[in-house]
Length: 118
Image (cartoon, rainbow, N blue to C red):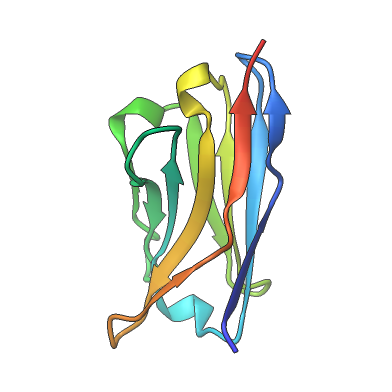
């Protein structure tokens, strides 16, 4: 059974930091790119960051988080992380980790809420 479990969310003031974790099981973690998505209030789900699986571990970030967020992965722990710095109210959302296998099957975590508020 494939499981993706996020943790690390919470409430933080503008300018603050959080680090999200996503631990996976039952999944060939090291073989696939990992993504973090978010869905803010009244907004569509959007991809925030992605990290490849191969050599070089290429990364992608949406423009609004570049320079503030950092995605990483630990293949031994089968986990991916999203370090978020200088948070602002527009970062308030439910964050999800995601991967897609060779068959096109999508795997999602349950989501973790991040609230940025003064």
